[in-house]
Length: 146
Length: 142
Image (cartoon, rainbow over the protein chains, first blue to last red):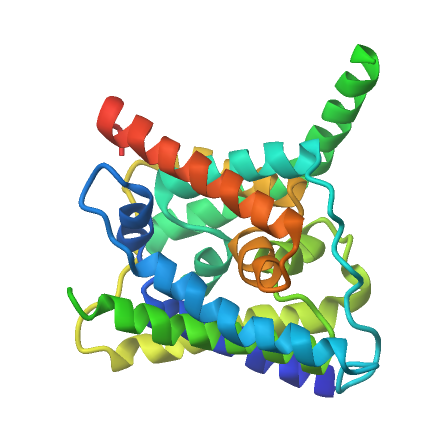
């Protein structure tokens, strides 16, 4: 029960931060990516601002055995920049640039993002369901080329 | 507006605090595509109540906050449904194949100096930037 309560609070604070920072506004996101247009630096402040508390949290976590509600902390991250990471990030970045929405803001704006927002979400969910097939296909291609 | 960067910083600190709490209290990485994707493809079905609670907060709080603004808050999303569908598919496939998006790789990965998080961020920023340049300035479709 407590886990769900704190997940609810974390999700709420995340959503509030996305709204306050302007990241639910596709114009601001595309404005950051558009270095040849009317460049908008806001996103750098959002990412920078978000990294500060999280860097502190990783330091605190390193000195603790367990999270407050038990269980384990996430394991060490892998260090390999593999094919899935590169191909996935490039595809994700292209979609992000096209419309200016990434998964967090797309969900956060579900109640007021209009028809366009809902269509984006449905397409995103469909894409998530297609992802394992693309991973499999890339693995098969890599095997065939070996 | 000139004040936007301050709100960006304030909102960013809120996003980072949410991620910090989720790590220290629940022991989880706050990655939107991972939390949602685990529900969608059922790979995270074992922790569905926690995931659903997170999504509920993520939807409810902005919905409740929006009327507090005295100017209309909008996503300003394009009207072009073909572009929206293409972008949604790319974001969904890409974030799951890469195992993370702006929140997971960006916020949670960079802050622990994860090579994968930093690498993913470089690639999606480059792809997004090139995408905007190509589709806006060369092709004029967005």
